[in-house]
Length: 73
Image 1: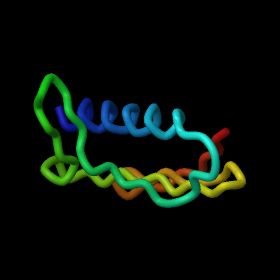
Image 2: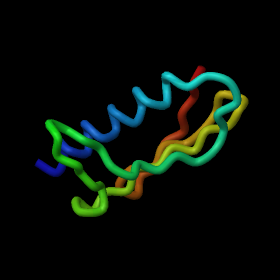
Image 3: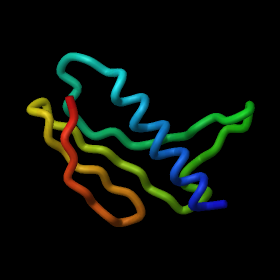
């Protein structure tokens, strides 16, 4: 269940950030997600999802202590 929740949260965060335009550099940390009226907190599942975006299209994605280099448009 924890892994499914984590995948859903990551997907949701990526979808939200992909809809942004303009200068959106900064650090984004998942605060909560809502599914079927239920508010889900990543802290209650021991997950910490963070994306750091730079205005040049580079960045990092950190999840469960693992950091990956990412690019975005």
